[in-house]
Length: 220
Ligand code: AMP
Image 1 (spheres, rainbow, N blue to C red):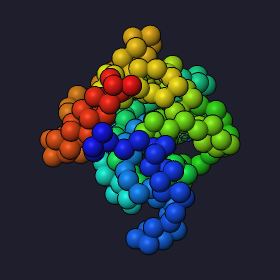
Image 2: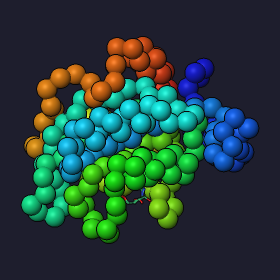
Image 3: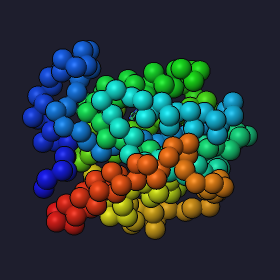
């Protein structure tokens, strides 16, 4: 299918080559559609998430396609935490998964994120690779699709802002069906439109890509 790129083909074609244009980065020959989850519940969470979306837009070898609305969500995990602000961004990227994860960690660190080992504890900024094309990974330090996403309304609801309902989350299910099964209480959109990006400026590109992908999924 012209225009659509799926990870397994692209990754094999790239056969782990580094390109001259981006020394030090493992890149693919062709871009892949990736959805990234953002969350924060410390130090002005709304500002943290908006800034991080801008930083995703500036990643090398990548183009921001769309960003969801911001959502205020009830915390999951240790009690007594402030509410979270969550969003999802859609990127097209040529960064291979580990290179992308390293970039996300760099952004988290720049926001002052320190990992103290507390699972689901409060955080200044959390960036997760939710879906990476049609790839499935289960390796130390990197599982794709993100293992918790199917159960998390605070991921699925913003994801539905920037992905087609028939998005196939590899090995997990179809987005619309996952959404139907999850409890949406405690996930409220903030007022306003997009999360600090001009969606109208990028929408045509994203829509074209997502429609192509959607057609392909229907054909599978
Ligand atoms: P977190 O506490 O959510 O930042 O996640 C802790 C660790 O999860 C990170 O250091 C990553 O190495 C690992 N991890 C595994 N799978 C993923 C993924 N799909 N996206 C982001 N981090 C991941």
